[in-house]
Amino acid sequence: MTDIFDTSDVRDDDAHWTALADRIAANATAANHTRTFAAPRALWIGVSLAFAASLVAMIVSGRRWAARDAAAINIALVPADDVGRAIALADSPPAIGALLLGGTPGETP
Amino acid sequence: MSDARPDDVLLAAAAAGDDAAFATLVRRYIRQATLLAAQLVGDADDAEDVAQDAFTVVHRDAARFEQGRPFAPWCFAIVRRLAANRRARAARRARLMQLWRPAPVSTPSHEDAALSRVDAGALMRVVAHLPPMQRACFELVVIRELSAEEAAAMHGIAESTVRQHVFRARAALKEAFGND
Image (cartoon, rainbow over all chains, first blue to last red; front, side, top):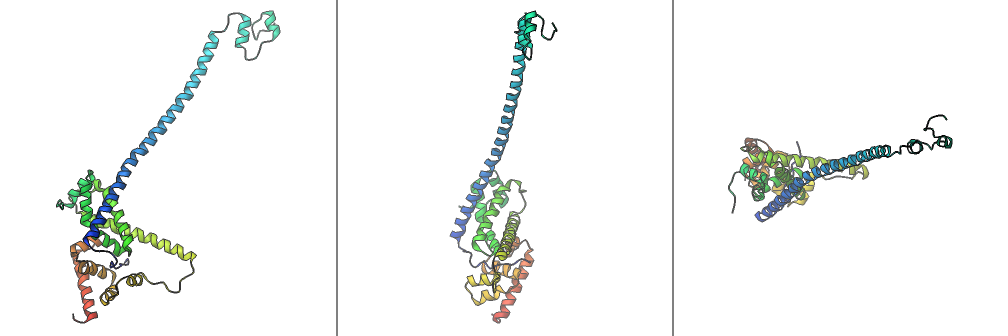
């Protein structure tokens, strides 16, 4: 059995109860209204995070596409002659001998 | 002007955003809720805090309250639960403090502490030594002039039990003060 305390230190007049009730009602409604607005705030945070994530994904994939497009453009713009192709397409500079003898890159003279 | 609408109607209105209806409901039950909390936590300020928390819970859960059910027992059950939580917290804190503090020579009991705060009239001294529920019911019904029904709802017990407690408390007082 829990202790039961006496309540003689509790004020017991109508004015006190009315004031206390009004204060408590105002605090309770304010607290719960704040909570009501807090829920959409959580939603807003979630939406913002999702937006940021999709933005990052778009930027990353955009870069990848840009790199692919640049490679395709480079191939399209390669000169038709052997020397031009050797310079444009080889990963490393072609041998001078190959250039002078007019062979295609990779070809043994 | 007082609002005569039933409790559950006021609560439904409060759930729909009618703050005035909620204030009416709080005014209707603030006295009982605070007195109940004071009986359970033993301090007027703590009791007001418990009442505040209880009505915040009432307002928050108003939409979930089933219309047609009695409001008072639900509200007082919240008060009792919050008061019990507060007491448990206070007990934990006290235990923790005792680890750091040297043991006092003699610690006054809750009752002694409470008695020292009140006007130590002979009646209150005798009342203070009644069994807890007898004291609670006597205080609410005889001293605070609440109905047995209200006291029963506050403590979550049957109205007949409240009457029995009050009867026994009166008998104990009669015995202490003679036949008056």
